[in-house]
Length: 439
Ligand SMILES: Cc1cc2nc3c(=O)[nH]c(=O)nc-3n(C[C@H](O)[C@H](O)[C@H](O)COP(=O)(O)OP(=O)(O)OC[C@H]3O[C@@H](n4cnc5c(N)ncnc54)[C@H](O)[C@@H]3O)c2cc1C
Image (cartoon, rainbow, N blue to C red; front, side, top):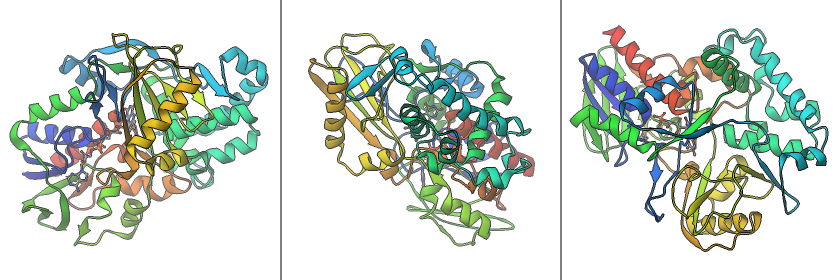
């Protein structure tokens, strides 16, 4: 059986590996010149051997597929683990850096507001019996029509709680609260509940960066990966698939499209997609993360995440567990802010982020190298990760997860663990299993 896999991100690498192990004749075609896709560790602009992740940065302690790969390639997790509490550590507000106690003093009702917000999500989650099928929730259409902005309005968040909850949406879903379906949020919570139970989750960075995992997977595949070649056209019939790239034409029994949906929007599908699939491929929402890293001569900031009402959105130290006197601060921007940053040049973004970091932490240290990446402007990605917008779980969830004849979609956007490296691996396994079962 001959299978062509498009995209050497975690989804494509995993699908290719499973298919190869099952004896299929596999070719993996990647438009870029390295494996990993949205996993990309950056070292070049920084001194002292330090690095930061321009894409995926954390593995959660219940992401077993990814944890197994870390073991396989001898990649250690770092530090004691981060818990995603709403008030992570600092709030930069009114020109001051407030600690959690100061936040509570400024708004004594804030925890009550967070609890009311969470209670609405929890009640939807509790009714989601199968986290893999949120579209089957008994009240799916009505819940899917609501957004996180509707939840915020219902519980009447105050100013500070509103800042935190907006930054949460911009960080976790990379979108504005009005662009995130309540049913999608509940699906994500239900998936975590089903995979990890109700315990508190810890997240970890890894030693040397996640690119090491992608490189390990690609090396194991041997010579079947072709870099610098783009899928441009595709056709299929009952007997097989014909894949056209910018360099050649290949025939196969199946194809796995393991790239985000945005680049697929410019592929010519000579066999027309069914209308519901076409609508899903062209309509699914994508978040807009722009990450900007700036290295400083000395670490003059207090430990822990800072949420800011400024344009930097969230500022934290990716080098917290790396040695050396120097340190890197990262600004993580999503939603409308992610788009706004994406319209600037890289140099402008670094200057803006450095200025906000300097003023937030009263830095006197000299600025060293910097790096910024706006995922929404990169043609092979078109965004950071999928976000199901209001109405999109009921419209697109199921159709994106069904094979279309001999064409199989893979990637984080079709996973239960949507938006994560773990989800990309999960989706690659699902596609490979279906193809192996089809024979
Ligand atoms: C800023 C950011 C932060 C993140 N943080 C985390 C995190 O902390 N933890 C976590 O688990 N996940 C995180 N993620 C998500 C994670 O990176 C993704 O879910 C995962 O890497 C997606 O893998 P994939 O294989 O689905 O897609 P991709 O990694 O996008 O791989 C698809 C590949 O297809 C290639 N391609 C595209 N079009 C074509 C074409 N026409 N022809 C040939 N090749 C093509 C691309 O070049 C790419 O290499 C983050 C993502 C971003 C952007």
